Length: 409
Image 1 (tube, helix red, strand yellow):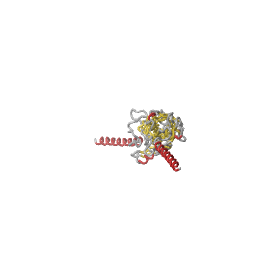
Image 2: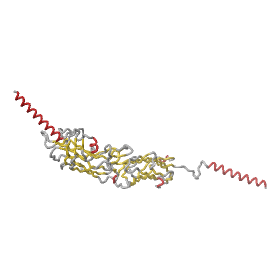
Image 3: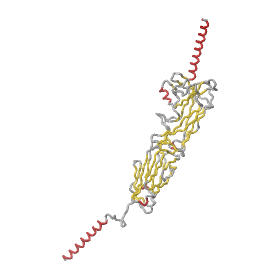
Image 4: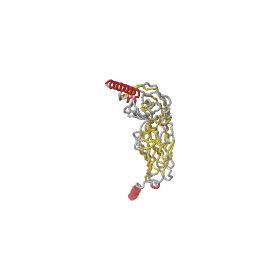
């Protein structure tokens, strides 16, 4: 009986030792994820073989508003990279990255077009589009960490007023793969992590992870900026003084938009009131504005110069025009005469906008047309009584002097 007990105990101990060795081997092979440092899923639970990352365009405007997007196209490619980098989880378990097998695909193109509206605000609104990475056609040959390189290319940023961010144009995707379990076919993916830099990753040293810059795609982080599009707005208000008869009349205005140097793309603007939506840039847009009404063009690319000219089409009036604006970047001529059907630089305003890569400001301009009444004789009526009294006095003195001379003679 004692011999039987000793044998059973020996078998139990041996089995426990083998099991422990097996578990240790499994832990070293499969590198469990921890706290999103190197994996977001428990190895026991495989994840989908597709994942989504983001591309961001940060759009600026002095107001919280919609603007039309610039025309800009980004292209993407994914390929395995033989990085052979050391990846360590927070428990100190390590593995070398392997080159990702062929068969991975990614959305080939992300595009913003000037016919679609995007959100903007003064601090920069994050507009994102999705990139889909598909690994369903990849055949993995063993457990471990596989690294892929994702490359972004874009040749038309500057031409369309887009400022390049400080984020790099390459990303590195680590794919965590384990052995198949009962009922599973093939090696299974149990986690993904995307980095900006092709570094060793040490989950026991947070500085190492920060240096690699963990990210959700081609998006801004706390220390890096995404590609940005800067815009501003121009508002023009029309007022009439001493001309109630024409307060309902809409005066013609011409807005000439001139692109910044090096910008060649086409842009759409959002326009209000009597203005129509304008395809601006190196073009003149005509509109009309009546008394106490305002036309606003929203989403003008920073760096664009706007020249505004008013025409007087009221045949019976000559106006004195005063242009006012609160911003120092508005160059205006004040107190000039605007004759019938005469468009002249003397009645123009030119707005020199912010630099292409700076947040814009609102420009508010007022054109005031004053109709000044004059007397039929060309002499102000307020002065005429004094002129008559002076003439009468001079005449009386002449007559009196002549009469004294006759009496003395």
